[in-house]
Image (cartoon, rainbow, N blue to C red; front, side):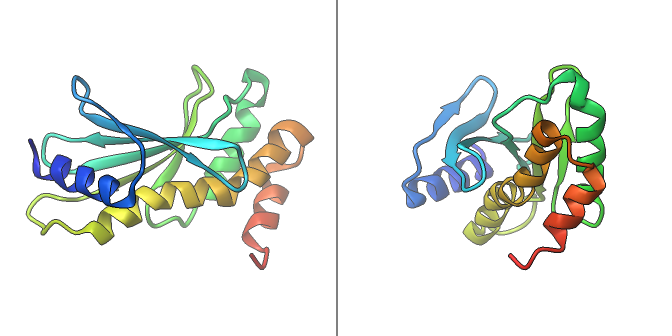
Length: 153
């Protein structure tokens, strides 16, 4: 098994998280309860060069009539982010946060795994209320982002 597989498996076991490993596609999958939405699916995709990418998947699909507003919202959210970004699939409405860890030629570091795994959960939790207001309350994407990014929390 790869260096990243062993390190991530050890990290998840140490956290006592329940997960599955899909060997044929080389990824770990688990769910996390969130504060702002019911739960979030997390996929930790292993890469050939021992890097890994973490996808934190928003639990709702964006309806086709809301794609433009959601795209504006996540473009505004993405501006200035330093670790990862939101992605929106215009074909099926999937929204996710992606963070990638460079791994090759670096020591195995549980703190790096922790940061990359948890950043997606934190970003979903932070930006979900504004996204929900855009999707279901017809809020203006700019105003929704301003409210999220200028809050004291």
